[in-house]
Length: 175
Image 1 (cartoon, rainbow, N blue to C red):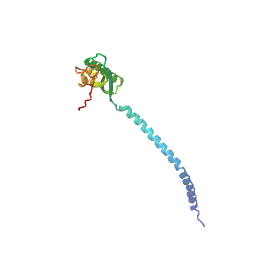
Image 2 (image 1 turned 90 degrees about the horizontal axis):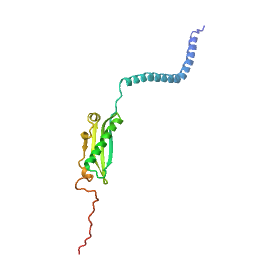
Image 3 (image 1 turned 90 degrees about the vertical axis):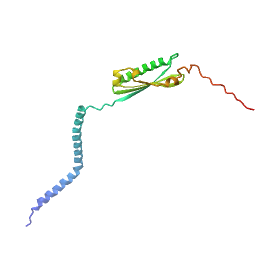
Image 4 (image 1 turned 135 degrees about the horizontal axis):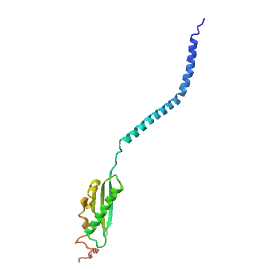
């Protein structure tokens, strides 16, 4: 007599072999779904954590310096002192405007240049921080004046409004 006791196990093994073959065929699909599930879990937990941290911790403020370059022309019959007063008024207006327009501006640097008879020279620089300007908005307090500007712009006793003439060059031949 033959024992058939091992036949059911063969049958189960054969059926399991088919099951494993199908499982192997389905593995890429299952792996894809597992990756998607991982992504959903990671994003599902990371996003609320990020939102909570950004709501609790304030963002870094990025402050900066506003730089303004202004040029003004000398008016006819205007002396140097009157010109400096106009330059100070322009610097004061530019500083106030810079602080008013942008709340992130912490410092202002303003250069005022003047044009006179074709010559251009910086006459003052206003460099001030927001707290300094709030406490004392006086451009004379924070301005740096360029002393050479008076002579570079042809102001003073040595310069006149007329054009400078060149002396005539004579051709001398010595014989």
